[in-house]
Length: 78
Image 1 (tube, rainbow, N blue to C red):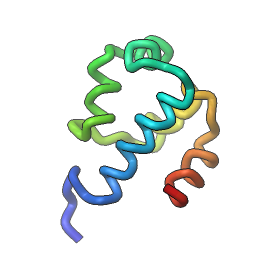
Image 2 (image 1 turned 90 degrees about the vertical axis):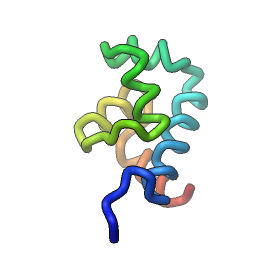
Image 3 (image 1 turned 120 degrees about the vertical axis):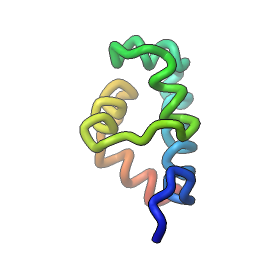
Image 4 (image 1 turned 180 degrees about the horizontal axis):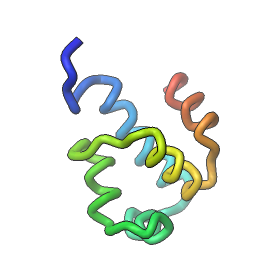
């Protein structure tokens, strides 16, 4: 299986991250502020320019008010 940032799984993750952010009622700017990062950080992982490691994903989930476990469950159902 090729390692591409544009795999179906990666695109699914991007859509789910954006959906979780919107469900939390946060803009990219607001999420970035919670993460103490620039807005471009959020934009880049939502559009696929940047991949996330597990630690970063956990931090994002915490900022969105969901557990990493719940996020992974959503990913599996999405």
